[in-house]
Amino acid sequence: MLEGRGGQLWKRAENLMLATTYKTARGSMVGLRYRMGPPSAMVGTPSRVRLDLSRFYYSRYFYSFVKCLALEGVGVDLRFRPQTLHALSRAQYGEMVLAERLVTLGRGSGSDPLLSDSPGGIRFGVFDFQVSRDPSVYDVPMAQHPLMYARGLWNQPVAFRKPRSSVLFIGNSEPGTYSKIDQDGVFDVVGRVRLRDLLSQSGLSRELRQGEGLSDAENGRVLLVDSSQHPIPMDRFRPEVAGFGFFLCAPGVFMPLCHNLVEAMSVGTIPLIQRSYAELLDPVLEHGRNAIVFDGEADLVERIEEALAMDPARIAEMRRAVLEYYESHLSPRAVVARILRPGLREVRMLAGERSVGLLRERLAAAQQ
Image (cartoon, rainbow, N blue to C red; front, side, top):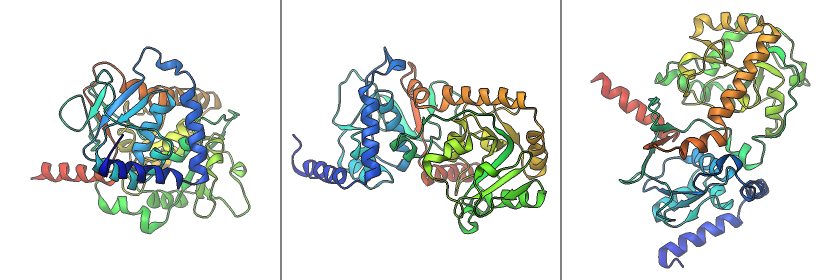
């Protein structure tokens, strides 16, 4: 029994659980269904891990991290620290961690693997965009959007029909928000507003018109979809993307990595992606194998033309390679297998603007 301030915080956590929306409640049932099933791929691995976090920076990415563990039947014991629980309850999607009971507060068993940001156990820290190729260091990859997991949509069956020989560009392109990555200059990427302008000028694209659906896309073209004008329901996103041969992966607000890259790859749609973005993945996406990679503005149109002219048999071959990459490196099963692999000494996880801030500090130090 937790007493005093600890008990008050736990009571607050329970109140947060009661205050969740219908969608989060549905996510709780989805998570329960997965936890009740035997974790077939995880047989012989620990059934629980321990987390000891004295600082909490991880926002939405923490939900996806512990949800992946839950989906594979691995429980999480989060050491009770008032400041950590307070930060978790206020973090984006942190309430969902509590509502779905994805963590148990306590020290857990000393025989279970320990991930900690304090000395002892496997080091747990923030990813700073310096990708480690050291097999003993695991950079937790970008995941699908947290609500994809919460609502059970991340592995929703998709009809793998013959895709159109066309490229899909979809997302909010509001200039005031999505020009920041160009203005900051921290990442060597072409932002989505600039990408959209280049495509509009290329003659290879057209805008989705009012009253049309994504199924109206033409072969041999790039379809531009402004999601603020033509919102795609979350439960339709992966099935709709699956109908396209290629997906143009535009950067996010302040970093290249976006959930939609993982969502597109989960249905085999081939990423059309800038090299500096592709190199943030481990292993790196390879041009002509599991991605179409462009270097910047200069060869964007050439790479798009290469994709649009690709033979259907070649597209099918690359789609198989994309699905293989997703299953081997980005799926919950792949993530959990890496976390539980023997010999691991450090885990690093995205922390949004905190991660970008660490990159800025590293770049500034290198210039001194």
